[in-house]
Length: 214
Image 1 (spheres, one colour):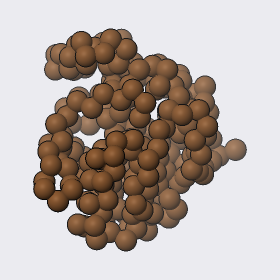
Image 2 (image 1 turned 30 degrees about the horizontal axis):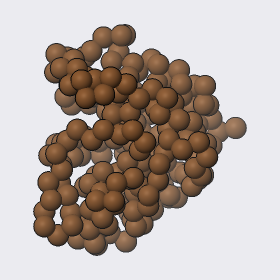
Image 3 (image 1 turned 120 degrees about the vertical axis):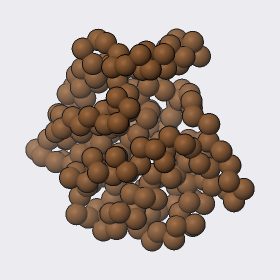
């Protein structure tokens, strides 16, 4: 993703696979939360797949869907494919390079799009571009599962969130936590409406947005 500032330390496992501690911690809550929105079939796209630890599990838990991972970092793309090979999942495609903030990318219409822990790592114009791209590539009636930390009501949801935001903005003043309400407003402008908002562990949220059926 253009401008993305990775914050977690992904460790090499020696076989091409990378592993991020946060991925293991939040995997099963994410699987539970996304389950009602996973289509019965079709192709689901993950933006900024990172190490690939999540999407191989999506593929394993939802075998009737074809899963397409993407990222912009060559090491992460290699890691995703190494996880795919290790797990032997047949319903997961090879990782593709994709800058989801580009103004004209098209891979859709997708039956679902998933994005985990991205919005706080990019600036506001990039976030709006990602949202527009998601809306452009979602099939009518399909869902975008957007997980991560947000501010709500203009306030941080914990002291830890406030500290993490400060660390991010020290690194780059343009990035950091987004207001949930602002993200929803940008999504509404692009034709996406809230289908659900799910409280997640560690004060994170899963915002599920739906593209209108018509």
